[in-house]
Length: 308
Image 1: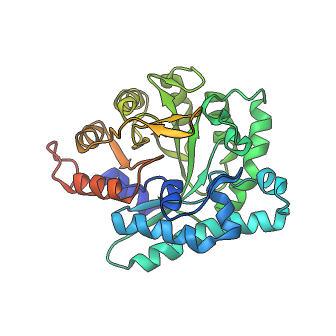
Image 2: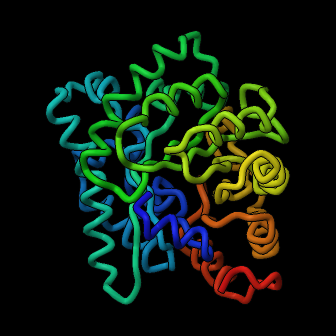
């Protein structure tokens, strides 16, 4: 992250956006494609900028680009050559910048370039299982080229997100070295373990050892799992913490629908802030209205006197 963003995280708290796909689908875009929201980087880029703008208007300080599922391999499978794929990766950062400018100059706004896990490229749900049968070196070689392109677009941060296991985290930590763009790394977790079943304490310790990683946490998990994960992270690291879970609804793959009710509530947001989270937002099924609620909650005085 740029120095001013790191300073902002350490001195207060920032609001992250919600699910980009959630807002794009609400706007009527079909994302049933192996590239998911990244398809719109080539087919409908103005829709991506509009979705970012909706989150900035809702109170987000930081938005995450549409590059989560954007990889050279994924684009190639749809007939997009390497040069055009690289152009799309850089465009993802530019679209978020455009949205920030459109949102106005009343306050500072930042852009984080998303890098999802290897399983996101497979588009088969394996990003929630990890352990793909690849070595750490093979995963590093997969991630490094697109991270280089994203870094060249000069985002304020790289968001290494929805990481399901420590092997991929190790690969990502290696892959960001020398890129001169600090990063946050967030795991997708279940209870006190990564999705692959490793203890979160070990997972956070691995990320904490990397100087390029300036914040750690969790995303794309149940809201109820965040507090425990933050407590574990704070035991092994003094770095700012990140929390952006799903809405609390659960995906029923058999019926192809979301079930249950949202559980991401202001009381949880306050508890995450008290636990040390300095970048708080939402992931799947979290839209601008919920981000607006998060922004209002974080604008309240902190009983501990740490945040504005």
